[in-house]
Image (cartoon, rainbow, N blue to C red; front, side):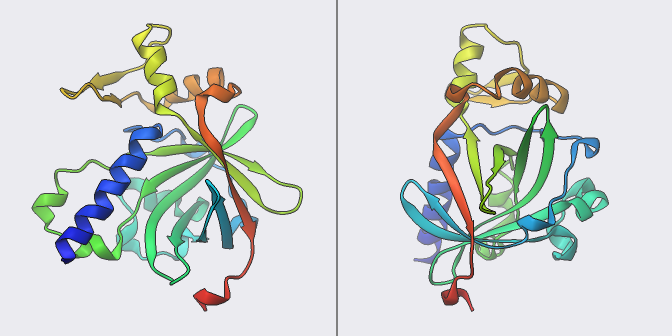
Length: 215
């Protein structure tokens, strides 16, 4: 039963990732990073009319084993974002960096280890490649913020119609994997970042709060 639960969780994540833009490389360089301490705290999230919770902590305070590659060198400007349900169960966890690209702020999410993955076979996990997920962040006057998820289908259509040239690979199942370096990703964001069609669905709203069920 545990294996079925783990596989179900991964299938849900795969379905989720199919709709959003994922990239092999980050959208930022260290020079682009912006750190906003007001993002630290517990947030109530409303996404597609459903509620959940997110705890945003300083990446510098995280377990060093969660920090991949060269991330440790810039951890002071990073965040650890943990999503939980009302039962205090962790559903998602990301290493995130906030970057200014042009006139907008963007979060770059990168999957961090979950308790469930520690129970999985290492050989099995080796078959999965972690990808970066970019969101545009907009700060609200009342103290919250919203995230807008970049849409993979929009970029894929531009690629198929040969309207943009950006490095990618097409798998046997016809899925497109964006392999472009950071410089090309930023060119795409600068050109299409103000086009509403480049984003998927409604904005995800974060409201600063304390969830009594989590304490």
